[in-house]
Amino acid sequence: MPRPTVSVTTERWYGRLPEFYRDADAQEQSGDGYPLLRYLSLLGDQAGEVETVLDRAAAGELSDPQRADPAWLPWLGQLVGVRMPPATTVQAWRDAIEDGASGWRSGTREAIAAAARTVLTGTRYVDVRPHEGKTTGGNPWVIAIVVRADEAPAPLSKVADAVVSAGAKPAGFALAVTTFVPTWDAVDTAYPTWQAIDALATWAQVDSTGAS
Image 1 (cartoon, rainbow, N blue to C red):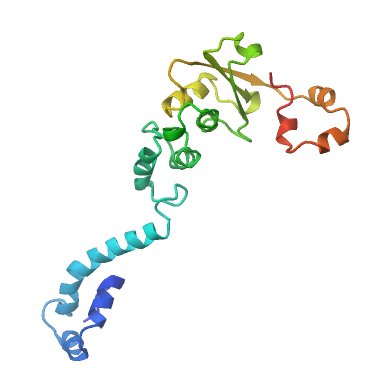
Image 2: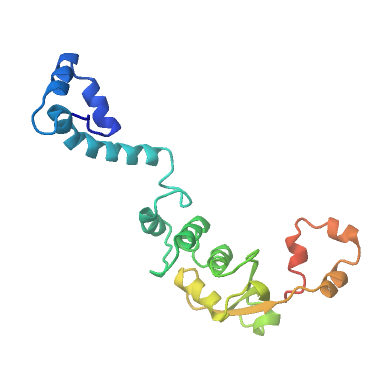
């Protein structure tokens, strides 16, 4: 009779038995054959699943939002306070947890930006400005969120909704989301020479030229 397929753990247990037990088990013709191996697999296969989970956890795989099984994401999310709507895609879950969109960093500029990025496309540029005068009229209780027009969702209110849903908005504050369109005219005005551009730390500073 064919030898049943069992877990690595069961095979390890079975291999530790005296050889004459294993020979007798292989020669047994009752039922489906290999009664002793099948008996061990009742516990060994389940123990093997637990062992696999423990090995993956020890290797950091199940605590890494980009590698963990989808079923683990809600648990990982609650560790950092990330809350997402039921229809959220698996990748959006992974990104939100990795960015730490809420939880211990709730209300910070980094948390607000990370939450806003979940609904943006392209470079996902976000500039979070506390009580920015040009955008909100100087109201200290309004937080300005500036994004690129070509990367923003429709309607634009989805940006603020994402911040609220992630629990990243600080209590008592309102959110004002605006867009900007980067133009070469603005770049030429801000950086008239290539030397001025070369002196910048990142190209993202050029991309954000014109945001106000």
